[in-house]
Image 1 (cartoon, rainbow, N blue to C red):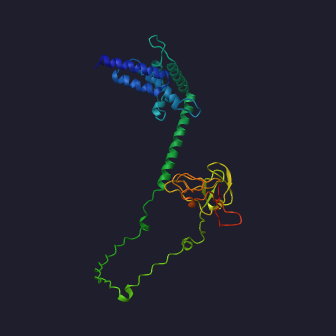
Image 2 (image 1 turned 30 degrees about the vertical axis):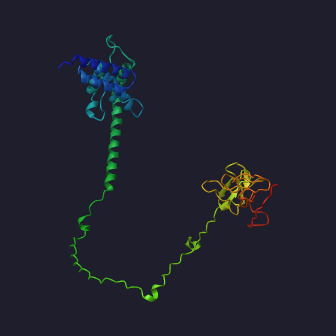
Image 3 (image 1 turned 135 degrees about the vertical axis):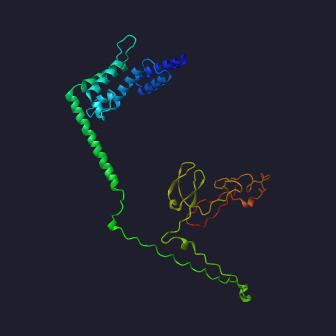
Amino acid sequence: MDPSPAQRREAERSMSIAEKLLMARDLEGCKQFVAEALSADPRAPGADDLFAAADALLAAQRRRLPSGGPDPYAVLGLDSAVPANRDPDVVHSHYRRLSFLLNRSHPDRPCSLAFADAARLVAVAWAFLSDPLRKASLDANLDAAAAAATAKAAAAAAAAAAHIPTASSPEKQQPHLPPPPPKPASPPPAPQPRQTVSATPPSKRGRPPRAAKTPPAAERNQEGEAPQAPPFWTVCPTCCHLHQYDRSYEGQTLLCPSCRQPFAGTAMSTPPPIVPGTDMYYCSWGFFPMGFPGGPAFAGPVSSPGQQAPSALGFYPMGPYLPLPGQGSKNKKVVIEIN
C-alpha cells in the first residue's frame, strides 16, 4: 500500500532532520528520526544510507580493541562473538553492502563529512580483516578474551554457590524424634476472696499521713556532679545596659553587646526592678534623677520652690549599681539633694 501524500511529506521532513542530526554527530537522534521516516514511508529514499552511516560511527565509538582502535567487526555490523560472522565471505558481503550505501560520488547524492568519515572507517575495517595474518591475530585475541571472561564468570558463580548452605548428609542427620506429648491443661485458678478495706480507727483518723521526705537538691544530683552556680547580673557603665552572664565570667573583662565597649563583669547585688507591663527597668544611675511617665516622682512639675514633687519620698535620684569598696554585699543608697 502506497503512503498518502501527507505521510510522504512527514517522511521527507523526518529525513531532513535526520541528515542535520547526522552532520551534528547526534547519531542516536539521527537513527530515531530515520525510524520515524520509515514508519511513515517504508520506502523513504536515503533511509538505509543514514542508518548505515550512523551505525558505523556509533560502532567506532563504542567498540574498541585493546590497542585503542575501533573494532573492525563492529564497524562492518558484525558480532565477533558469533563464529559464523568471522567467515571471510560474510565479512566481504557486509563490506560490499556498506561501501555501496556510503558511496556519495553521484551528483544526486551529495557527500557530507559524516558520510566521508563512515566510509573511511568501513574501508579501514575491510583492509584489516582482508589481511589473513592480522585477522588471525585478532581472532586469537578475541578467543582468549572470551575464554578469560567465561572463566571469570564461572569462578564468580562457584564463589556464590559456596555461600549457599547445603543440606547435611544422611549419615550426619539426626534421627527424627517424635514431638513431645502435649502438656495437660492446668486447672483454672481458684477464685480469690476480694479484699475489703476497713475504716480507719477513730484514734488514728485525725492524724494525717506523713508525706515522703523530698531529698535535697544536692542529693538529687548524680554522684560526683557539682551543683551549677546561678548566673549573675552586671551592668555596662558606658551605656547602662544590664546583661546576664554565666558565673564563670564573673570578674573578667567583658564586651558589651550594646555599645561594644569593654567593661569589668562585676556582679550586682540585686538587679533593678522591671517597669510593670514593659521590658524596661527603673534607672536612677546618673548625676541627675531620671524617670518615666507613670513612675515615681513623675506625677507633675513642682509649682513653687518649697513644694515637693508628689511621691518624692519613694524616689532616689542616684543609687549604686555595683558593690561599694569595703562594704561587700551591704550596699547603701546615696541621696543627693539638688538645690
